[in-house]
Every structure is written in structure tokens, then in C-alpha cells.
Image (cartoon, rainbow, N blue to C red):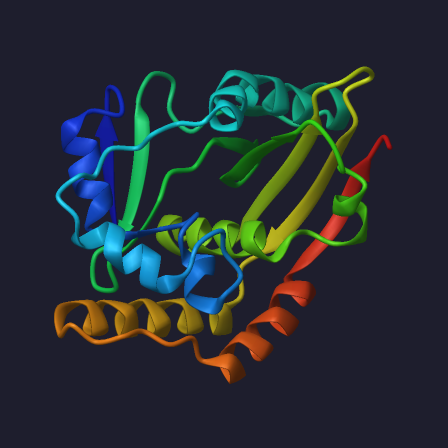
Length: 220
């Protein structure tokens, strides 16, 4: 595992990011993401590796400190950004997996991770379950950080700032599944083959994801 620090999302950061499956992209390998594995492969092949931020992504970046403050003021947790001034990128170089954690919380024995999400509607869906794609994202962060626990919270940006938080525990079998499928994706990529999702692994993963997380707070 390796840690990379960047002053901003610059050209070097973008180029490095392109060489890994990011935490947000990992769900695509299991048909649980926002794009297909084929589209992801196409994006990794193209020379244009810019990130075009839409309005929702911009709002999320603006409100990330507010979500951290939900953990602080609603849950009484000792929290902070992943780094005081830099972008933190964590990598599993053997399997070409990466993550960019949002924040950390501190305990007597050290620190663990925090992932921040925002929404303008439908936060009640989070009360039913932690969405699988975000759960996978968190597990990639735990894997690349070699930590055991991540808190993930979602804040709805309307008064009185509804907030939902889950505690996610690392699972070694999930680690193995993520690494196995990442390696298979890059093998397909390097040999110009089509990547097809392993539906049996997907079924197992969904069960493990549900078992790995616990709803720990809501003011809804």
C-alpha cells in the first residue's frame, strides 16, 4: 500500500488516478455502479483523463466540511479532514486500486476513516440500507488504508439538515473479492478482452456488504 499527497487535483494527480480503479469506480465491476465496466475500460484507455465536475459534485465538495461537522456536533466525534491541506490518495499497487478518503475520526487507539455524502432528496432511502455502491467505496478505502472501520454519513441539504450515518467494518473476504476482480479487470484491459461481471461473486458480495454495516445515527 502507498500514500500520495497532492496540493490540488492537478495533471499529475489525474494521470496517476487514471492508472487505478478508484473507490467510486469499483462498483462498476459488479454492475452496481454508475457506469458499465466497458465504459470504465474505455475511459482508462483514452488520453483525455480530465474530470468534468457536474453541479452535484461541486455541491458535494462545498458541503463536505458540513458533513464532517454533522459527525462532530450531532454524534460528538473527534473528526478532521484526511489531511489538513492536501489531497490524500491511497493505492494498492499490486491490484491497481485507489481511494481518496474524505476525513478521519480519532479514538484512543488511533484513527479511522470517514466518508461524506450529500443529497438534496431521498435521504430516507438511506434508512433502509447503505447503498451498495457507497458500501463498496468504503471497503476500498479500508483496504487501501489498511484500517478496520469507516463511518459514512449522508446529509440532506435542507433545514434541519437531516443526517444518516453508518458504521462499516472491514471484511477480509470482501477485500479478496475486490482484489480478485480488480486484477481480472486489468488483465482484460492489458490483453484487449471484454470484462464480464461475475454474477456469483456479485451475489456473495451483496450479502457480505449487508452484514458489514450498521446504522448508528439518524435525526430523520
